[in-house]
Length: 69
Image (cartoon, rainbow, N blue to C red; front, side):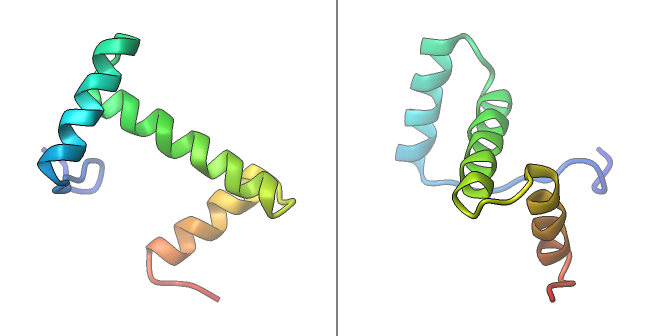
């Protein structure tokens, strides 16, 4: 697996079970559901800050790579 393209993370068992329940309800795989939740939250935060979504994502990517302002 390409570590530059894919990352793994640990979550609490209870949250994983909740995620699987959401997935079963919406017919999505856990990774796809997590991605949708994440992108929806990013959109929400960008709107809350009255920012362009792409600009907000760019700022988050810089912070995530340790290059915050």
